[in-house]
Image (cartoon, rainbow, N blue to C red; front, side, top):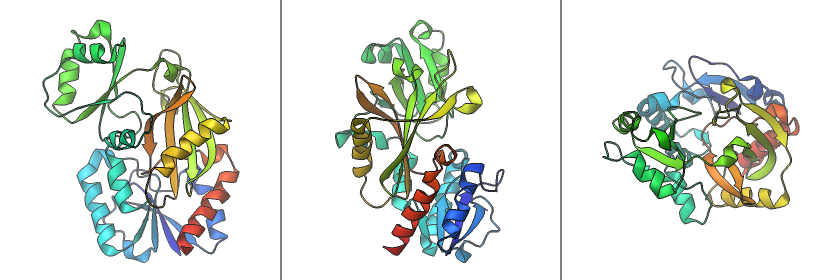
Length: 286
């Protein structure tokens, strides 16, 4: 098969992590090519399969990305993860769907665009000292804001400005985030490995570019079971998934379920590259 790893125009090549997948997939007879989703000159019909990998600007051009996805569906090209799952997962309101299925999520409320509201209300609702507000559509730490209870009045304009732009999710800042965020990687719906991501001191975001650290970690069978429950709640096949959350009172609490274009930390767990290729091959033969 001719396989396209979907990237984006400003970074069109394989990421170092994804490059590790080339040989394992080639060992099954496949050919791999990086292909930016936002390059209008690409003939997508020359590919048998598209795998969303580093299309990390999609949230900045959401209408264009949704149009591109619709085009790929119309062309009948197989997409991983599947088209309908990607559409559902793009908007973080999927958290409420999972909560209805009995998945434990960080306490979360939706604030609609242009809603009239105050920070004080949510400090009271959540009984917390700090709040996190984020757009419902975003990637990495895009436009995430942190508000302290002492700033409820002086930063009210910042909060209201966010609401003029987009629907938002609001959550209490859980103290466990400073101890580290857990990312569980699943390939073909089977657990592969886990990463502990820790923020730098006085920071709540865990991204490397913000001073965070990432390392392979071992999880208890019970925590893996809780992650598997989240994956099993998704109907249909998945090639890859990343389950992000924290451990609160011994239980895993979901922050985000990444099914569009998650970084999979393949470089931190070498066996995962063959696991990815085997999962792809099994799904291709089904």
